[in-house]
Length: 379
Ligand SMILES: C[S@@+](CC[C@H](N)C(=O)[O-])C[C@H]1O[C@@H](n2cnc3c(N)ncnc32)[C@H](O)[C@@H]1O
Image 1 (tube, helix red, strand yellow):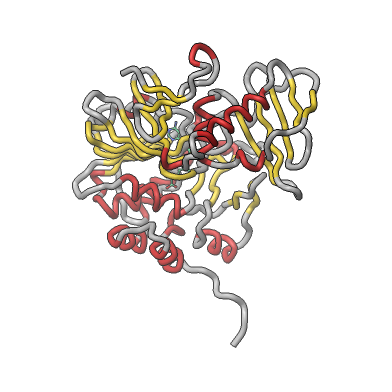
Image 2 (spheres, helix red, strand yellow):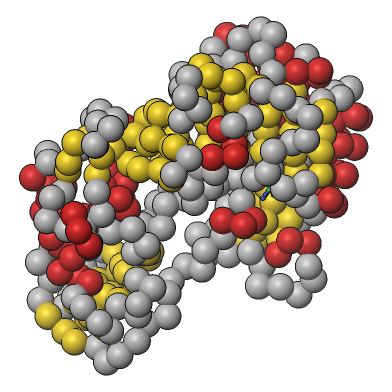
């Protein structure tokens, strides 16, 4: 028998997540009981690599909602006639499942979510823990209103707030778990101060160097937090944490032969290593017929671009490509560690990335510690 392929259904999607080992039995029941479609408004877009495409028609919309893809629900902070940048979405279900797994909630625990978005994650948490233990904050009032309506229509009443989740929720007290569903450039210490010692924070970090990653932090008795990176994650950033793709480039180009194929740089472990060694350096890429092209920039106008099989071009002060190659060889000498060997420590004075153990802090390559590479932390 032949015919058109069957459109995927929500139970198919949940089964797929479970088959991939992303849902415990308990979370599978919760996902099954909370249909994603109830939290998706009428106007939606599909996220393509370079733009958002409107999804037209109920069938197309339902096919997107029942697939393991993000569903974009707002462009340009809701402004008309903007460039079409996604600013709110119902996240990719496998990413939601991974994050909720890392959150490791237990019965009776209070959770704070930053970025209510469509309300889907709040609904899953309500189903798992009960309405009264779930708190969620959303910056955009229109998005927050839609989420509150969708939640109420599905029978969920978590504590909702319209406001900036980077700042403490007045009167909330300490929670056991905090999940940020918008990407952070750094983990604000103010977030940690809302979580009890022993509690867990799960957040996507938007690294400037190529790619973002999930981090799972455990809050310590002294208020600091430590934990591992747990795979890649691309999320829309917290509003105050947005960065433009690249810095402005200065000066004339200088060409030289490339010492490595730029495709090698597109590795999450290297992105975490290089992000710590070369803070403030941005790297983006695009695929080409022959391989990839990368652009690297720094705030002082220094820049480089390299494409597979071609010469490297460097611009502005310094030799940014040489620094990238040097950092790559260091990474290779360290055994090209996978992303899950890296972790993060957050204190009241900032955050630092480490490799294998919190004492093995990766220091910036420039300035006083330029020649040291990996060093033991002082304290
Ligand atoms: C990927 S969406 C969240 C998805 C959501 N968890 C869901 O279940 O649909 C990210 C959301 O974070 C919100 N956001 C951005 N910056 C914020 C901030 N500073 N405080 C609270 N929410 C913020 C955005 O408006 C957007 O709705």
